[in-house]
Length: 401
Image (tube, rainbow, N blue to C red; front, side, top):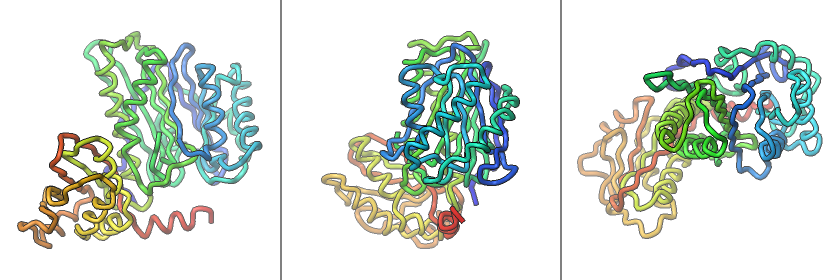
């Protein structure tokens, strides 16, 4: 199950950034499950990671290495999260990096490891070591589509976004992501890799990453579970010859943010068992914090999400979710709720113009907007989510079987 168009958009190559994919047979024989990425010498790298206290071994290794170096190689395996694996997990993550460093002829600090899959199981290191040369030999600048498939777990489709902008000597931004369940990034299980051929110094690149992430991956939730492995990596190779400075920074961040939003929304459209893509928009709030508190209260409500699955305009559940969001001195008489532009609640009760028929019609499309107008300020925030279906329960009940 998924919503929206299943096809990947055109993914432009990024000069100085290569990707290679292979099958290690970690969980499913013959399935692509090992991806290596290579950035040209001199590239800038920025990354942010999960805030889950039980972060995976690769996340620990990545944080340590980024604090002292600018890596050039990134290796990702699926089928095993290497989380909850203790000291052995750290040794395995380091061993993977060591094997790739030997292949590439670089220092081990030049390699960052990433993993996604089942938590609490040790890595099948023999399979990974055996597959690394194949992925390394497949490195090429046009390897985005294969890599987008190679990083998937319970996803039903690859996810990518790409843009070129600028009239003369344009800048390219291309990214891929994976994620379908255990999604509530707090920087979802979520990995994202984005590269640009612009030249951006590391400090400015990190600032751009934080801004883009805040408006995209930090605005999605499938099941309110933050993964142990969430990672977002941004690489700037500089091969376009165009330098991003303070004058061009805002335009660059705008295009970067749009790329991030496309990837984040792709994750929601491919949420486990999803039949609805839902935007929860909170308008006219006093502050960003109260807008987000209400948006997440609605987006994460199991009762709201199951009603969405049934295309049931059960607006009372939305009302209740707003009320329990702990927003101070909220005047419910000023709140309006709309479903796909149909006013369903006003002045603390069902809107006079509302009918069950109009509500049912509003719930039929795959794309649903729940708009909540607080009428007490000028702040607006949006959180994207999905419905909660029988298929979601089945996928997660059978995840390890």
